[in-house]
Image 1 (tube, rainbow, N blue to C red):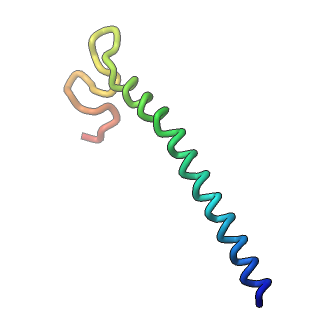
Image 2 (image 1 turned 45 degrees about the vertical axis):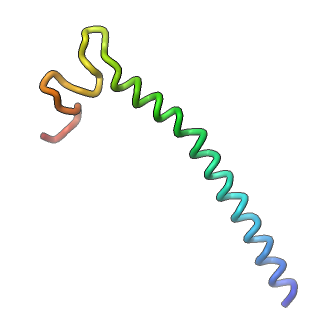
Length: 63
């Protein structure tokens, strides 16, 4: 029974490490997505925005 509790503690420790690393990975990826979103919304050389069409609708919008 003591061995079972020890194994459960080891599994809990591993899950904690996995959750922490997953959190660190998401924090590392988020700035890249933010920068990409800013780049997509930046005005193009012709004065239009990559994300907005001439009618003011977001590109790829079904409306």
